[in-house]
Amino acid sequence: MDGSVRSRLRIACLFIVALAGAWLPGAVAAPAQTPPAVLFRNVRIFDGTGGALSPPSNVLVRGKTIARISTAPIAAEDASVIDGGGRVLMPGLIDAHWHAMFAGLSPADPMANDLGYASLVGAAQATATLMRGFTTVRDLGGPVFALKRAIDEGLVVGPRIYPSGAMITTSGGHGDLRPLTDLPRMPGGPLSVLERTGIIGIADSQQEVRMRAREQLMQGAAQIKMMGSGGVSSPRTPLDMATFTVPELRAGVEMADNWNTYVTVHAYTPRTIQRAIEAGAKCIEHAHLMDDATAKLMADKGVWLSIQPFTGDDDSIPLTGQSRINQLQVIAGTDHAYALAKQYKIRTAFGSDLLFSAILAQRQGAMLTRLTRWYTPAETLKMATADNADLLALSGPRNPYPGKLGVVAEGALADLLLVDGNPLENIALIADPEKSLPVIMKDGRVFKNALPH
Image 1 (tube, rainbow, N blue to C red):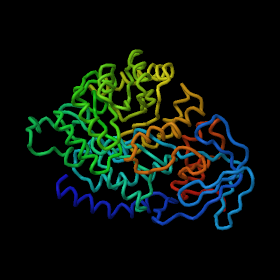
Image 2: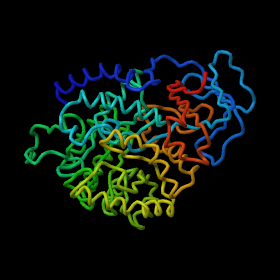
Image 3: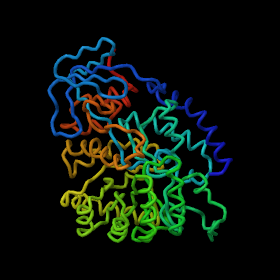
Image 4: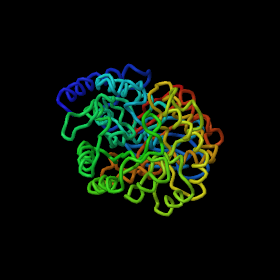
């Protein structure tokens, strides 16, 4: 990233705090000091792991963690009290495939080289993400490091972010949206707009893969994202194309392993999935076109599947040409892919991967509810809480938020939602967070409390 880009990004961050405070009523930027104690009284708990609610209980939060859970009264005179009135208390939701900087942009915006505007839009979307009940996201590509820092420092209201940084791809691979006038790419030549702004890292050799992976890790990447096949939003890449060779993928895996974290690979087809597994990737993104043999291989190797319930045209902005062909292939493969995941008991994560539309981003919770086509509401909510938290833990020492996420348990990080209704009986409540989530807590701090005072 050159000096002019860094300067624009710094300036943008100065304005983000003003945006975060004004963009959404009731969402207030939080100072960095320890939050006050909070006592939830008379709640029924979905703990993120089981299939039933607890008896009426009380939950005490001190600092950033859950200090005590009891069916008996808890004495805490210094705590502010939230009377749950029998409502359900559950862990904050986790989206395992999100793009914080792209959710609210148009498809043309990444080419505009305007990180100031992108940062402001990203901050607004971060606030909206948290207000939908998603207290954590795994960001799988984009210049998100500054936004993450601003959220962590309390300058911006938003979720925890596990950043990947730039998506590592090849020339002509998924994510390479350069105009053809930028070709040919000369080794050692000037970087493209997409590379300068940290959206992608183009790597056409093992040596370049190592360099690009190291660049993301030195900026604070929690995991590395590599593009193993074509993708829907890249109009010049058919899904069946393979990008990296096994040695090139392995170079990225080795660099991540050197930093004690992991690589996740974007791949749709059996060939590209199998290449990624052979190279040592611990997670596959998408995999909508996998076959039985590939699904069995994933299960046998303990590789995670991060897949999205794409079932119709309302999952993306209108597409044409090759992108439309790819989209229809993904939609057609979704049901079979989930069936294979269940058949072979693959460790499966939920992610929404909603891009390039603030209107579509609002469907984040609705996307989660689609999983009930294949899973019970309890299984669905477990996937988006405790299971997704297990995936995040693969970052090991590179985990930016050490502690137990995705559960309501003593000692766990206090990311909590109070639900007005029982989501185990009516999971559609998750799709209407403005009405159904009167209280949202992240890191022990209440960011929304719409209960009568």
